[in-house]
Image (cartoon, rainbow, N blue to C red):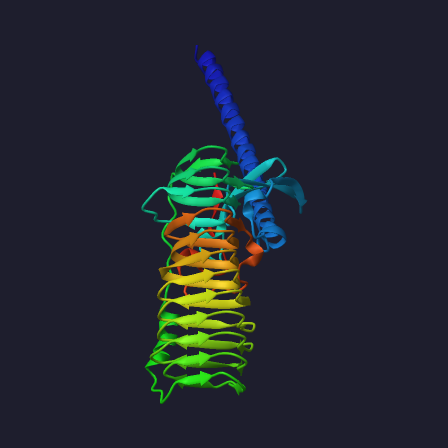
Length: 410
């Protein structure tokens, strides 16, 4: 009997030892597998990060439009490969997911990329952020590109929108009006931050004392890099002022008329109003900073890189042309009779009639008249290469290329 118990006990011990040995082998094998997978996982994570950096260097850093970037991969890298997918894409924002793979083990990292520059409103042909009434686009007025209007829009007669999308609260098409695409606004754009400090500091130059007015109807005045102060400024007929330099009207107005000319690199600062008329001309890189309104009339041509800033209204009339930046943050810009704008326009409101042509981008709060043969075309090539003062510190408008939310995705 005792001998039988010993045999049974021995068998039990042998079975127990076998089970423990098998468990030990299994645990060691599992640890080896887990260790191996962790090793390959680290490799995959490094490949994913390498793929993300490759994407930045070869594509994203120099890309002005993220919205049309395709998925990529697999692309060989080191001992594995990576692939690229986009979780979201707009013109200047995208969320990228890069998956690295090594020996069948994959890891994914994600990052959000944001392209700096002008505020997002300037990604549209025309952007109206805070309108108070329904917009009527009438007659043969046309938009080429995206149009953002944070309210109701009615297009009548032969008005049209092509090569873009109308974003508005509602859209009504009447008569033969057409719209290539329409989307309802769900998340309205934030108001644009525009800092007037730079321009107000320039207008402080009008506090400087001046002994007399400048009335120049003939001859030539050379500024030679200096700053000259007059109570008011009137330049007419065959008179010429050569730059570079600055002239300031401390209390009165500025008038340039007839065939008078201003040379290149001249800045005019005026306390009152500024008027350009008849066949007068200004040179390249012309800047005018006015506390009052600005009026440009009768065939006036203002060349590229010009800047107009007004605390009042800006009015263009009778076949005038302009290339550069117009800023009237508290006023309206009105275009009458065959005016052509090329560039950036920012104002409280805009009115466009009678064969107005605008190529570039417009951001306003209100749109008044949009009628007749007015044509607005989104053309980023017409926007300034340097961000105008006032926009550069406005949050989303900050210049540069930023990367946020770089993380591993599980």
